[in-house]
Length: 479
Ligand SMILES: C[S@@+](CC[C@H](N)C(=O)[O-])C[C@H]1O[C@@H](n2cnc3c(N)ncnc32)[C@H](O)[C@@H]1O
Image 1: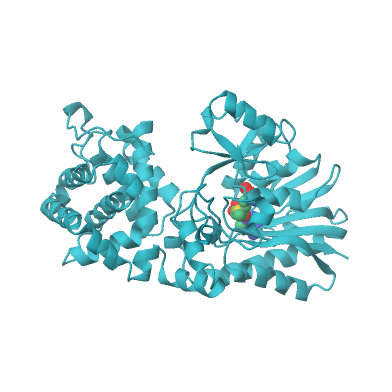
Image 2: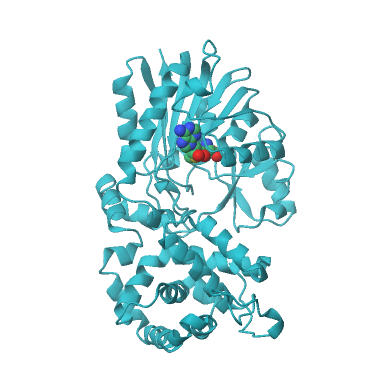
C-alpha cells in the first residue's frame, strides 16, 4: 500500500519548467501529482502502450517526480485504475453529459479507481481525492477549464456512490473490468469457473519467491525470513510467498542469488522438464530468464537460452549473473532453427517451449493486458505457437522431451494446441503434466467458499490453498 500522500502543496521550488504538458504547480509528493502522472500513463495505454513503458515515459518526462515515493504513488494509482477501468469509464459515461477531453477523462478514471476501491479509500480519504483531482486538472493550463466539471462529477458520485455502483453491476464489462470479448471467451472456456477466473485476475498477485535449490530449501529460507521478522509461508516445492510485498533489495539473499521472484505457477516448469546433470537443453523462448535460472538451479546442464528480442535477451544474462549460473544465450527465432542452430547432429534431450501467448493468465500482475489485446490476436498467436512447435520438434532427441508452456487461460493456446500437436506428430507421446492451471487466489483462513479458487489440477500441483497465475503445461516425449 502506498503511504498516504501529504496534502496539496504548491511550493514555488517544486514548480517544474513550463511546457505544453508540464504540471505547473503540483508538488511531487502530492496526490494531485500522482493522479496527473497516472492519468498520462492510462492515456498511453488507451493508445496501445504497455503500462510499464507508459509509466517509464511519465517518469522520464517529469524528473521532479522521480523520487521513489512519487513513482510508487503514480504506479499504484495506474495499476489500480487498470483493474477498475471499465467501472470508471461507465461512471464517466453516466455522470458526464459530453465526453471530456481524454486527459480529463483519465484523471477522472484514476480518481474513480481510488474512490471505488475499498483498499484505496483506506489510504486516501474521498474528499482528499476530489480536492487533489481538481488540483491536478487546474495545474494544466489547457485543461483548467474543466476543474468545475471534475469537482461536480466526483462529488455527485460520492453522494450516490452505492446506487451508482449497484447499477454498474448490471453491465458485465463495468462489473468485471474486462473487454466484452474477453468475458465471453472465459465464459465459453470455463462455464463453471468463469467468475472465479475473472475475479482472480482482478486481485493483486502476491510476491512469491523461488528458493535456489543450490543454496537452500524452503524450510531453511522460511527460518531466515523469520529471523528478519518477515512473515511468509510455503507456496510450493521451491516457492515462498511473502505476506506483504517489498522491494527486492530488502529481501534477504536476493542479491546473492539465494532467491528469485517467480510466481508459484511458473515454478512448475523446471521440475516438469525433468532435466538431469549433463543433459543438453534448449530454453527456446527464454527472456527474461526466470525459467532458465530455475533449470540451472536444479541440474548442471549444457543449456542454450534462445530469445528473439535482443534487448530482452540481455536480461537473461543479468538474471544468470545474479544467480552465478551460466547458459549459452543465442538471439534468434525459435521458428527458424537453421539461423541459430548449426550443430544439427546435436539434438536436445529437453526443450522448454515457453511460447509467446496472450498472457491472459497473468493479468493480476499485468492488468493492462486485457485492454491491449484484441480478440483477433488469439488466432495469430495460435499460428505463431504452431510455427514454433513445428520447428522445435525435429530438434528433440529420440527419447527426449518437449514441454509446451503458455501463461494463457484460453484453450486455443492450451489444450487445443496440445491436441493439435499430439495429432500431428505420431512420434509424440503425451506424458503426465498439469494441463490447464487456472489463476487461483489463496483463501483467507476463514473463507471456505468455493468461489475463491478456480483451478482444475491447481491445488494438486502447487499445494493446497495455492496462490498462482494461470498457465498451461503439456509434456511430450519423442518415441
Ligand atoms: C513467455 S515469455 C518467456 C518467459 C521466460 N521463459 C521466463 O520464464 O522468464 C516469451 C518470450 O519469447 C520471446 N519470443 C517471442 N517469439 C519468439 C521466437 N519466435 N523465438 C524466440 N523467442 C521468441 C519473447 O520475446 C519473450 O521474451
